[in-house]
Image 1 (tube, rainbow, N blue to C red):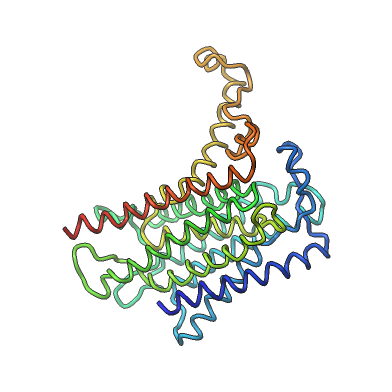
Image 2 (cartoon, rainbow, N blue to C red; image 1 turned 30 degrees about the vertical axis):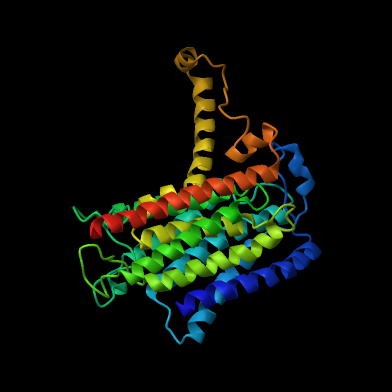
Length: 370
């Protein structure tokens, strides 16, 4: 527990101070954000705002975690090292995307195929290592499992390794892109991420206290290294808190793809390692909704242009749009909502999703014990 408090506190302090320094350095070098031409016109005033602030979040998390382990004289676990690999690896992919945007002065960085290849390589390596027998603990537990999970593994049947790696790839790329899509308003993705990682801090602490390694029972949790995962979750939460001080409206710095891809990948990593993959869909419900808005918009637009039957059934014109603009937060901007209003209300929605997810998690344990 001491390491959790140290990791979170140190990361917050490093991020709070480091982000201020990063703003000066990035602004001096001209590393400013490029704005999409087809986005809301109110965003054009943000052009030139320093970006790649996700570097500070990543650095604060890594330094905060390892310093906490050093102070408490504890060795890092295999689960923690894998999660940091996923977190930093996707941050590198995002950094390349951001750097290309800045160096070439355009709002398009890596091509979508190149970005997907980078995400895929990181996700597959992570999945392969997380399932590797070489990383089993003395109880035979690997960081990830071969079972589908909601709150804990469904033990009815085990999936082949190839299928599990595909599912891990789906979650990692899906949530890294979901956070990336949500990162469109000052403080939106950062604030929502704080709530999700705080939830996983609590989940990991609870799983540790009810771990099968401590006391076997019908409702104990077969999760490897939950307490060490809680240290990283607290470190990321603290790093995002410190960054939010400077990222809140009006933002003095953006996290860029460097931060959003890393944070989304870490969310997926926590879900995989805590055996709560499907629960993440509830806890991260806001990110899921934002992603679905883009998928619905693109699908309806394309089908309405290609299918006369679709147009006649739903009585829409060719190229019909369900939302005025996507991702979802831009739709509300086009309706006239103030950006701050959208951000706060999306934070509230995320809070409700997190409360629901954590409530379901705890209720399952209470029902099982009773």
